[in-house]
Length: 261
Image (cartoon, rainbow, N blue to C red; front, side, top):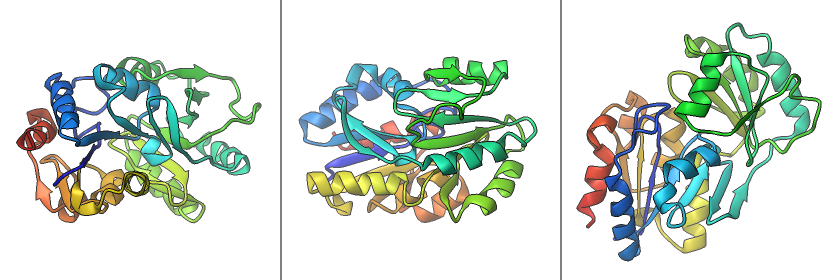
């Protein structure tokens, strides 16, 4: 019997960088909770974005944010992983040299960025509905950073090919969609966050169902027996998952969740 469902958001529940979620999912989440099946939203998004997206059920679910670096439920911090400030400083100095790139330093309260790209700000504020603060120099104040991310509108693979080999020995690096590359502490990922929830609630992988679409979902896919790749997922996720659901725009996740009712 399934006791825990975890789903990625962008590319899995809805199109990347939007709030186009089918409101029917809120009623399904409530009905599943009545059957003692808990829902966890698992994303690279910030908590401020995710809590707005799931406002009708925000007190009924677990939030796995920042790719697992920050996990909370009803305002209670279940897990917070912080990146060493010296590492943050070295990383920022490298990212500043990448043409056309913007970066974020993610704390549990908001994003900090030096970007002056208006399109980037529209995406973060209007697309993701995240709290973001622009600063002239992100390194003048030491911050409690749990994730760092690079945004570039085009050729994000070029950024990934440059940065991941340079940082993979110090940080966990993951391509998170067509415009983002994420960096967290070693060992931080959605799968580890789910395992911590499973241990706390005494839920097994056989009692867990997960949904994902991109490379930063791979560890999550491996944390559950009932693992699903949505139809639009990258090949690596489809190969790792035990099942294939319909695409994100065809409510693939919602269709499978409804079968549990």
